[in-house]
Length: 258
Length: 279
Image (cartoon, rainbow over all chains, first blue to last red; front, side, top):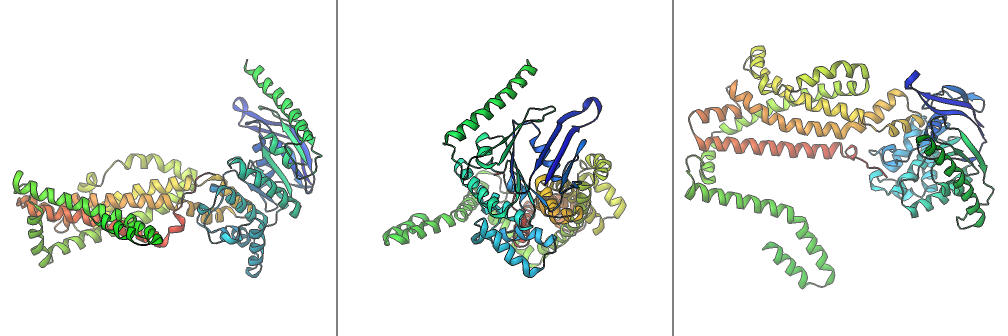
């Protein structure tokens, strides 16, 4: 269980400080798929960076299985939107996956089968000798997923991983990710500003308000069976209710500006 | 001419032969255009110096070639070439090595960068030519002053590029490595340095070109051998044909060295040379 307890994040000091997150709390169960949804600048990525251990909290605490998160660890792997810069361009597909295994000192004999398994899972087993530059955007994201899964983390932290892909590739990546998630039973925390994407993927959606001092405005449980269909009436209903909530947030921003 | 004849032969053959025939032409095109460019240049030069301009001030290619033959026969030109080349290579290797080491440290350690950057920002405007008088006083007119001047010209280009390469290592890549279990030191060795390679190589190429520019004034002002010295003595005796031989040799030498450097990089560092774009 990943537990976030009244987390507040303030950047800078005194007058120059910025209150990014205020009193955020949520329990994320093992194997759950949680989406953090909100307008840009609402602190979604900040929260994700805190979960990853890249940033510290100002107040509150974050624990994984009752242990404090003090820094990055192999139990949590972060995914980046820009796979091009997150991957190692001088290593082949296979070597990118091998990178984490080498660092963990996985015995050489075991690495081969692990690499095979995850490259097959993401459909890149026939491209193992290629370099990331020779892959399409979707394939690069799949390689990022294989590289992460190979070190067997408990939690995948994904920062708008599909935002830069074209619509068709994105749809394919959505069903692909749900498949992988169902196969591997990982906990996923997925940041997005796309309402449809969050309904398609998540067990629960945490809606974040605009900053400064953004907090969870609401946490919605999506009960629709998978695979989900955006044309479905129930899907549309959830979509409209989230949209209303976000519009409310936008108007708040407008009032402040006015 | 070559183009039409090849395409014609290809067109006469049955279907599949056409495509390869065309692609051969396409592949040869850059080479053919270079040859055409050179041919036009030399013919025009020959014509202008013979019939329009003063052939004494601008000797035609045939006269330059005639001046080159005895210089090659006696080995004079090759002696100067090898002397200049050795000076460039030694200064370049020393300058690059030290600049890479210091650049990597400055790119990674903020205090070191903050303390050294202001000094470097001032000193980089001192061209090797400006350093000639002091270099001669410090090191004499022997080899050491040439090594120093080439070193000076190389150092700043490579240093500034190395710092930039280290600093621009994508934060996402470093964090990804951290998630995969890399320590601070492992991130530095396994991620930051490989990411900086394309920048370092670019800096070295610029430095190489600048080395060939700085060796000439250094040898003109303070040497008794090398291409700059050859140029200087030919100038004093107003031997324009020998001046042109020296100029052509300098161009050719710089060009060939750059190509060799690129070939070497391609052979050894190819996989590090890819800049990956977003998406």
